[in-house]
Image (cartoon, rainbow, N blue to C red; front, top):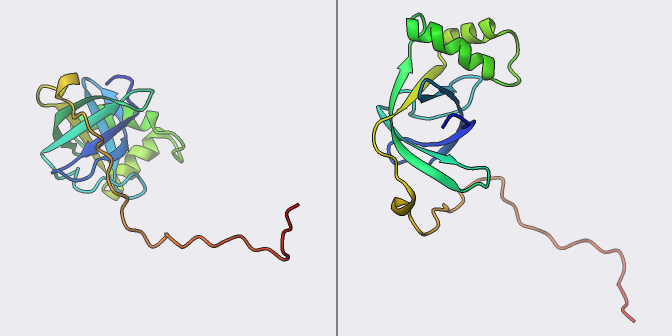
Length: 154
């Protein structure tokens, strides 16, 4: 978990979303909200499922997590939010500016702490867990290539 930069998080049996995270004190911290990544339902959830994958893309472990939201102005916020902001890549401004923006815009800094035994090797499903692609208006029919003249074969 210490090396994790991305975790797959599922809330209330919903689809697992790939979320940028930071490992801190035995838990993962995730930032979501306006101007940050979208994590519907995570800020208000009490529990979630976290899946971590290895360098090869395969699942290493899935574990249940206890979800708690850090509140701006508290001691936990003051000690954790700047550390998370320092790890945030491509953020405009300084770390202090980023933390202030998170507090002002209502962004959620959420802590995911392990809440039970992980599902290990034998407990993982043997079949594929691939989901059917979601419907999108971006799909369009593929056309045949345009040709100006007839191609002769010899």
